Length: 64
Image 1: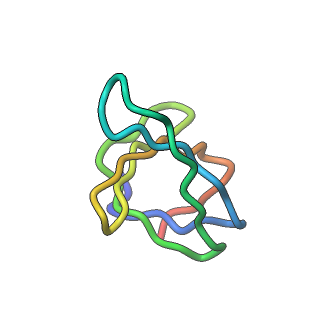
Image 2: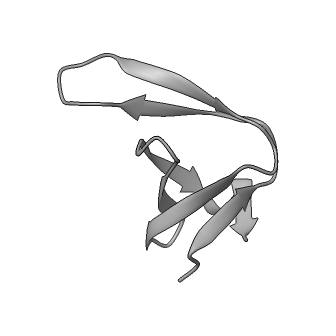
């Protein structure tokens, strides 16, 4: 499993802080690195520097 991934393109990913709260769009620039917490068949579960969690499709990023 990769420790980190690097985004291939500019992306807007969705984040929901807690159940029942609004979903917010978080913008990322191409080349941004995210920490990988878990790897699945089609996505990585990642965390940014602010501790927000995101699912990133494997075709949108590469291992860093």
